[in-house]
Amino acid sequence: MHSHRILRLGSRPIRLLIALSLAGPVVTAQSPVPRYEVKRTGAPLTIDGTLDEAAWAAAPVAALQFLWESQTGPKQMTRARLLWDAQALYIGFDADDADITAQFLERDDPTYRDDAVEIFINPNPQQEAVYYGFEMNARGVLYDYLNYNSRTLFKRFDATGVKIVTSLRGSLNVRTDTDKGWSLEAMIPWPNFEELSRRPPVAGTVWKANFNRWDGVQPNRRMSIWSDPQNNESWPHVPSRFGEIVFVE
Image (cartoon, helix red, strand yellow):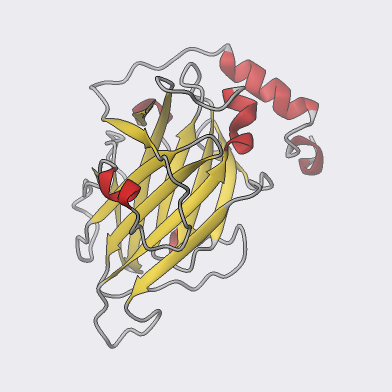
């Protein structure tokens, strides 16, 4: 197939791919996955990267774990949060970081090579073949894609209306000083998920998701993650091990 045909979301191949995935078997997780309650925000959020609204303070914290001892570099904590309203899903990350680095500047650059946070979202847990990936570096640059079968990334999927802002507590790409950290705030409007979710979530809706962070400069790179993928390598694309996110009022 020609890539310019298969990568359009409205094309028959993508619709067929999703239809086939919906008919596939569901993989049973080896042990329970974490569950996160996504609270509804009553007031509009200002997307400025600071996470200083009362709604963020009331949102539960999903702390990322360090699972791969073969990796080197400092273990720096990351806290993720989610909120929702009628318009969009809101994502907040707060990362401790003594050396903030990010080189990539353009949409769909390999931001995961920078100091970056990621969220993988499956709006239809009845299938595990297709999910959305959003990888965002400390500059707020977005690499977004559809992931098929955990290994094929359709990077020509570009979410629309997304807003991402970061706030740095330190200096970017200055290796000789000591920074404190950075935070990221993102808004993703619901229409971006409609191929898998059919309609926006309501209270009680359950999706699957995972949060990750890549931190450090080669060769001292470390990944932290919310829901344990239960593998021996730092490979986060294991949709059967995504945590549950349940939307609540």
